[in-house]
Every structure is written in structure tokens, then in C-alpha cells.
Image: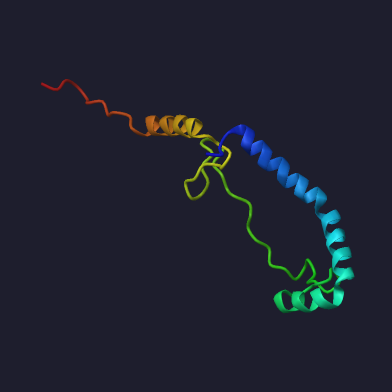
Length: 114
């Protein structure tokens, strides 16, 4: 299910809300951890490594990923033959019909065939 425009909009807005509230949640979590610092931090260190922004690797050291998808402007297919995720099945069917129609032109026989 969950393919309607309304649900897509709701998911998008929830993601933006999460992003907006992330700094407040982080500060709240840190304040809670300060209250129980000696007990909780020992457990957290066993599970995960805490990295401060200063000790994180620089932007120049990271390897760039190719996130740019090369699409055909005419039929919106990417290099793997996939349509964009936002395109609904009706639009895909319409574009595919247009693409197939252009390919399969019947060849006309020269002259009369008796």
C-alpha cells in the first residue's frame, strides 16, 4: 500500500521534521546522559564509538560517490532501464507504449505481392 500522494507527502514531511528536531533531541539526550554519566557511558562505549566533529575525517579525504543518475531526457529511463521512483505505473505504461510503438513499424513490401 503506502503509494498514494498523501502518504508520500506525509513521509516527506516526517523526514523533514526529524531533520529539524535532530539537534534538540541530541541536546536532550546529552543532558540525560550527563545525569547518569558514569553508569551509561561505560555501556555506550562498549556498543559504539563516539566521534566528535573535530576528530571526524575531513571532507577532502572521503571518496566521492556517483549519485548522479544518467537519464534519457526523452523516455526518462536511466542507464539500467529503470524509471524514476516518483513516476506512477500509468505514466510508465504510457511511455513504454510510445517507445514500443516507435520500434515495431511494419515493413512495406515493394511492389505487389501476388
